Image 1 (cartoon, rainbow, N blue to C red):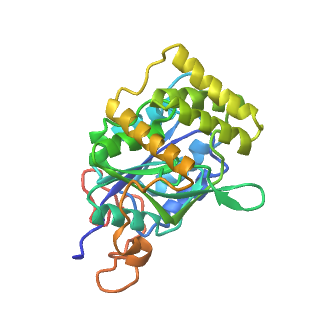
Image 2 (cartoon, rainbow, N blue to C red):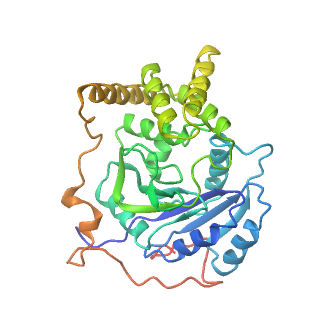
Image 3 (cartoon, rainbow, N blue to C red):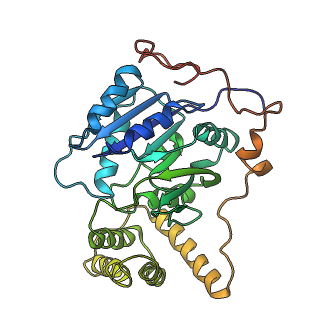
Length: 340
């Protein structure tokens, strides 16, 4: 493959009360071998010093900006986070090749976005790409409880053309599943890169009471258009493996049933619903037959970015040297060649 620049990317981070972790996340981005063109951090009413930490870095790196969400009321998983993301995206000064939704409590290795961008460059159909999530259980880092074919919601990279094609993100619980089914229904592929790990310092939904998180998840599953039989299997599994045992699964099921009985609206994309139900039917059949559902995208050529970046001719471990940005070196009206 001829030597060309990696695709550009911009990051949008909806955050609230991340003072304990956000410095680590910012340092991880500053250490990237392929830097973003912009990073818009959208604060949603932090009271713990998050804004002060972000402002400290923004003063030295003008491609990092802090804005306020302007949203009122209680912060919830789903709709409010998406609304903050949309506000951040509306404030981008440049039009990146890749748009990233990134939480403020993560650590990513320095090569993360270089490898990610290389996948987008080599696979024109790649619409959504991300690594695998690891969470701390008090003793060790363990895989996030997420389907192996779905990109985790706290670190999702979209080809911007794909994000536009699906009409942006849905402001609802389940947005981080709807986006992928909408993309696949339109011919885009979703790529989960097992060679890239993300350390997630807060478990999903940890800021909420467990019962509210499970109820909202059930309502979100109904909005997505889950098959009832698949939802039953999901609720049973979650009730067995997550605390509180049984109750969590029952509350999830209750939220789903309530949403269906009250005829709550479903995602306004019939193609996405059809894609989701087709996948769930395939997974049920595989479960009953004792096998595995077929992959939803062909394997990456030459085994993926861990093998592409070997230092041989054509390998792009690191492009041109990337200077550390300094205050005053950024012109908002000019796109830098090294995308910093």
